[in-house]
Image 1 (cartoon, rainbow, N blue to C red):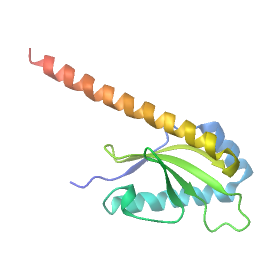
Image 2 (cartoon, rainbow, N blue to C red):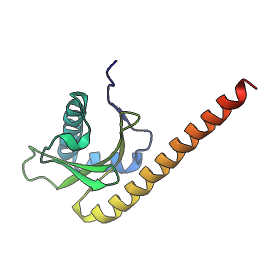
Image 3 (cartoon, rainbow, N blue to C red):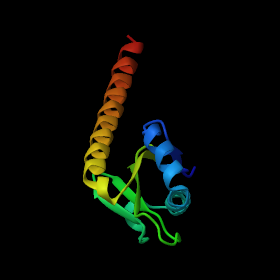
Length: 135
């Protein structure tokens, strides 16, 4: 069975998305269209590092930024996502422009590290519970 990649917005900073969409709807739409394209590429096989498109760049720790394309006179926009390889899930984190970039990347990496810690804890807890279930 092939793993299908999904998009998850449980960790998204909803207020940021709402405000950004209100101010820059064309850039917002373009970033999400590019996110769909990234998921298509992931579903063809391999991981995030196996393909290159100009609007998809690594920020480290499996946090990526997706830029807008095809928007004339655009505000340079970054949609930040975390690519969770084991779960075949792309977590949408936040959106912003170039002026907020350093702070956005720092926050997104912290969110990603927290998610990884929680997943590892859940896995350990599951193993621990299973080992005592038969006893």
